[in-house]
Image 1 (spheres, rainbow, N blue to C red):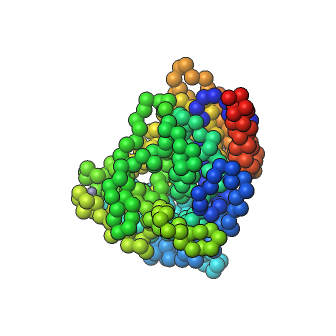
Image 2: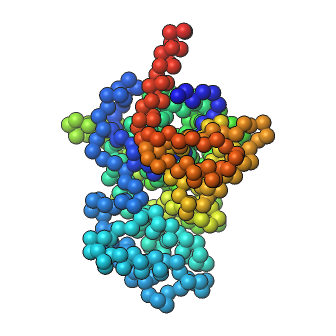
Length: 417
Ligand SMILES: [Zn+2]
């Protein structure tokens, strides 16, 4: 199962975070990972996002129904709103089943973003809906992730070599935490993540404010490993004013909390643990220092129009992912479904494997998925430009295999040396 020489791009989908074993956050040594005991928590998938979370998701449906459920509602450009039909269907299903207040969070979010994009001037009702949904997404992910690490991402990070790239479509910050842990555990100067080299801009109301303004622009292949978050992150904020000089920057804003002892639950002094913020902590009283406009979250759903015009950092991440895929020797997609509605990820993969440097061999694509890997779908996307195979295993089983293999390799190297 050796991954061999060359560059690997790991693509993480919702199934990777959701399939992750979460373990209490503490300073693990590498040899302690195998004995770590998972906690009873899981990152939800988009179709079950608010189930059992006590976050009143029905409020959003009622708000949208009130504002967009009326027959005469149209977008300002005069086009018929896509929101109207969607909200009506959602309402109908709720009436048939009183218990049913949920809908696929990704679908709802995509509708809101699409409508915002289509309205020439930003509609305040849509902006309010967007604010509502992004704050609840962060709160829900925080319920699952706060105080936890992903054991599987920690093991995955141990597999990284200089030049490897992680491309993730997930909003949660489990992969950042795993990279942070890795650099503490085994620091190698040639392996860094974009998120670990931000410029500090100081603290504010107990929050750590970081500016991600050093996105690497090549040349590829890179001399270090790179993390690219194509749908943004729970910790990212930006100024929404398009002609403001700050608009191109991403601010990573994290709450600094004392870490808790996993056994006693007591706070451990001296150790500041960064976690994402949400509205109840008054974060969104955060305004741009330059133009004074309220900062917005940089988390986006899959959308089919021109990629993420409102979010320069996201746009740059997509461009870098394209370059990385062009130069990849292997592409390992973990828990990623390649949904047909996600047209831009399809374009990204198809276009990057087709337009490779002439000296590069076609990449090998592996799909790690516990059941029904989207093999035909991906073969359809990449045609004859690449070889695709499926590894029908849970992420945790696959990464355990890789991790053990890596240990054996290292032991052998030690013996020789
Ligand atoms: Zn500004």
